[in-house]
Image 1 (cartoon, rainbow, N blue to C red):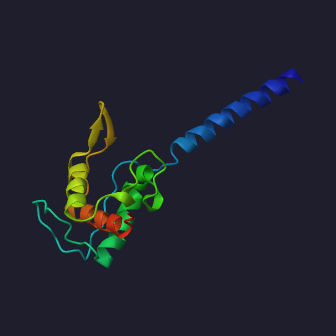
Image 2 (spheres, rainbow, N blue to C red; image 1 turned 90 degrees about the vertical axis):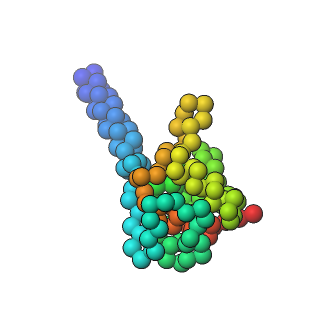
Image 3 (cartoon, rainbow, N blue to C red; image 1 turned 180 degrees about the horizontal axis):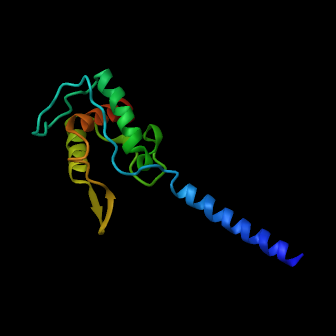
Length: 142
């Protein structure tokens, strides 16, 4: 009887480890995912200073997809942050917000030696990043 309990306990422990390993992979691929920008005006190699796609419905749609693939894991679905990262609905609009966005997307953020925001420049195209900014602006709240 004791062997059955020990075997059952061992099986439960193994099942627990298997489930824990599966949940560790539950966030999927955390590498930056490409943003397909078909239909957006190409911007070239030099960074533009202000969002060229502001209010563009197609860019907002592309940006929503890009945000969900690359940003939502930290900034929350629909940009409603759970506290891990800033709630992007409250980013400033216009030039001030664009400058902040470009700085963070191009250079990331290291705070007290800890990477809080990865560098996206070179991993996602400028077009893809500005599409994400367009999506963020479309959800802005005061």
